[in-house]
Image (cartoon, rainbow, N blue to C red; front, side, top):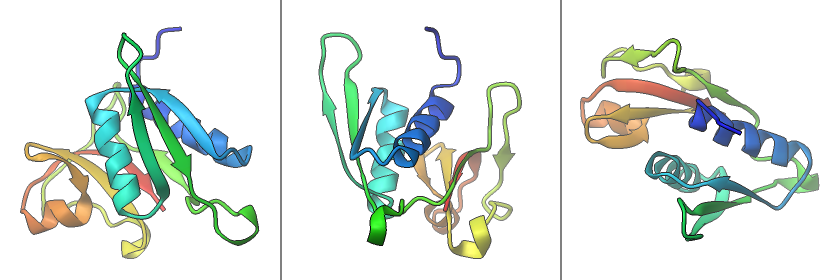
Amino acid sequence: MQVTDTIADLLTRIRNAQAAKHDTVEVPASNMKKAICQILVDEGYVRHYSVKEDGKQGVITISLKYAEGRQPVIKGLKRVSKPGLRIYSSAEELPKVMKGLGVAIVSTSKGVMTDRAARQQNVGGEVLAFIW
């Protein structure tokens, strides 16, 4: 199966795994996905992730995080910039997710970072996803 939007595939796999109350989810590895997973860990949305080499591109195993009563920590994941419609934003116009309670993941010239970090470094870029 050929996936054209790998980031949307990552977000959908996380969303589906949490809906099914799985502890972990595996996705094919890429540098962009590793950077997004690192942001999810840093922001406290997932426990941790690990990368296993399989001779091809590798596999990322993401350990999901749940609150009381197996409620998922991630309430929502939304892909913003798609292959058919790229969404770019300057540092001043970066969106605030849920008035600052959520996180926007932005791909900038200085790497993949949160909207807060991009504002601090005064760089804009492609708005990849919203997480809350």
